[in-house]
Image (cartoon, rainbow, N blue to C red; front, side, top):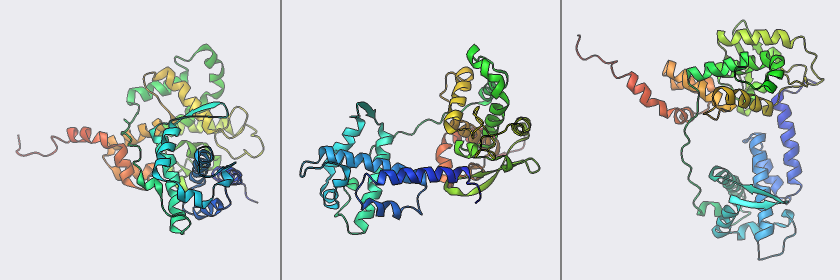
Length: 349
């Protein structure tokens, strides 16, 4: 049997988690989860499952027309009886609630996402004549302000990579481990900054996904689609140096093909990369909150600035809809207009 890819392994883990959550919900929920298998990723389905479970737990707490002992007791008739006021109370509850002795909070974006999950569920049951309506459609969803895109400028990128390569401004404790991981960190972060790949695409890379002849890597995009992404000459050096080092490491069984390895000789995790970026950014770009996704925004910004081609940026970043790209880089239009002010000549001087 062929070894599962990183994305397939994640899908299998998510499917197991979804099935475990489903066991705590009424049997009719299995039909809903089955209905979205082909149209939604395993990560999205897992998000829906968690949001729906949270809602059903709230119903058990707050529903007063019948005694309920667990989420499995929530019938379709109960779902039908829930009105907009009940949903608004749930919105208020989500802002701050206590569960198992722990306090949970949700911002507007999180509440909006949870309501979206419920709306998809209600829409499915309503379409199949299992409930009488969709109460989510009767309430006003939280309005979100457009977030300012955080990105690094050219000097900040240089400072960031200098910190990765030379350990500039790292603490004495951080410097103790810096030499051991420097080549890996420099290769990984230079690759992300020169391609704009997502963190999941980066950690999912295998050694044989790198093609130095054509200067590209093969990544698995959202939805499982494979794509070739081209890296720069500047990224090729650190990547080549690291791969020479990587080929001498005896990886743990099951992780033999992984490109980027942790100190435990296993495929590097998303959390490890997040902590890596945080460590170097706090030393080199202390006034900005830099995350792996901000490296992607930085690359997209620089590519758009150099090419003025929003369609190329969308294609390279793997956006299925160019409007997504345009929304993220709309704040650069003034810069483009300013640079274009003398492009049209009216009279020869």
